[in-house]
Amino acid sequence: MMLILCTILHFSVDGVCAAVLAKYAIHEPDFSNIVYYFSLYNLIAFGGQWLAGLILDKRKSLVLPSLAVVPLLLAGGFVSSAGILFQAVSVALGNCLFHVAAGILILERYSGFREPGIFVSSGAVGLGLGLHGLVGAPVFEAVCVVCTVLALVHVLKSPAPDSQIQRESSPGESLVWLLGGAVLLLVCVVLRGFGGSSRIPEYVMLMPCVFMLGKSAGGLVCDAIGFRKTILAIFIMCFAGLQLPGLAGVITITFAFNMTMPLTLRLLHRYFPDYPGLTFGLAAGCLLPGAFFKGWVNIAPDIMAVVQFVSLFVAWYIFQGRERSSLQH
Amino acid sequence: MVHLSGEGTVITTALITALIETPLFWLAGYRNITDCLYFAGINIVSNIMLNRRLLSMRFPSSQILFWAVIILAELCVVVLEFVMCCCIMKSVYKFRLRRLLFTMLFTNASSFLLGILWILL
Image 1 (cartoon, rainbow over the protein chains, first blue to last red):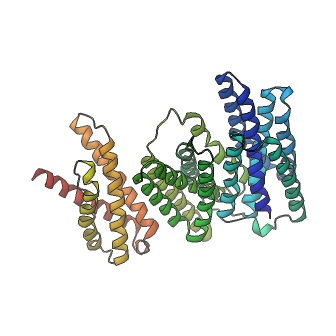
Image 2: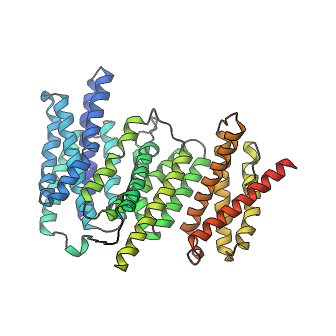
Image 3: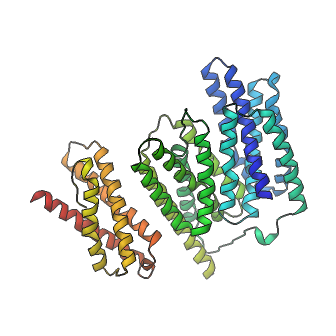
């Protein structure tokens, strides 16, 4: 139930933000202003998540209030008389808080790969619908309010049992190896920011659907066949995509790159189980280079596929070593 | 690895390389037939990727830099094949991973040298 509510919430929160910004962009004649406010939004919504995550990790009692305040912050996007600066900052803060608070709930209440994959998958569709004006911001806001209330009631009624929350202490772990593995995972996220966010103007909702399917499939496949076989399958899909011409190739590669999302997120959380908010925020923040520099920095997709594959394997191997080490102690 | 020039020869090159390297892999002690088939598949995939990348690259005019790029690309292939083997083969964990890495180096170096001999002769 919690997963379903958070998934719908993610869809509606991203939808509100995109619809508010799209409505402003349609009426703004100066393109540089549009770029400025979209960049500001991205910077706060994605770049601020690690800080918000760290605060919520330290003050767990603030997770539910943060979730409760999200619809209010998003409603700030409707106050057009306050100016676009206020609107952009308000929705960005709402988005930032939502991702971190809901991310903590999902990462702590579930232990598999499929749940973070399903949770994050819906955002792309909400973003696509809102950005292209296919669904209005008030509709998204209404869904957001209803789902937030239901999610809060659900969490208050059934707090997560301690057994479901992962607390793995490992006295033998080496911080250098842990940090090395975490950096490799974040490199994968940065590469996904460049390679996993293509746009096709003719079919505006095609790519958001591919993102959604890729993220969901990544988690589901990983839970079914295991981490190693999943990363190999992702690499083989990238290879197949590189051989396919035109749209089929782009869709296959984008799908495969998005499959890595739940893998990086869950493994990062397993590295630092006491910091679900920080890990979620770092993973989101590493998408920023792709959002800002995608047009300027060209990385060949085959090189990205190889680096992602090798990095994911090494990060998994380090984690396995840590597990063995903690069992021996 | 054997290197031929031209887009049309990429698949042929990959098949020839797999035909050279798979028996060497078997000779190195990996006698499981399924693993040998996986290794052949891994070789074809890595070789197609390598040759497509090399074909799309603009090489430096210096001979030393040219060979440096080729050897670096070969080392990347060794790492890629090693990781792919670790992901799919069960028997690799019976041996030490270091041994698998040396086997990858041995098979790739052998086919690389055979390729150079082929070009020279």
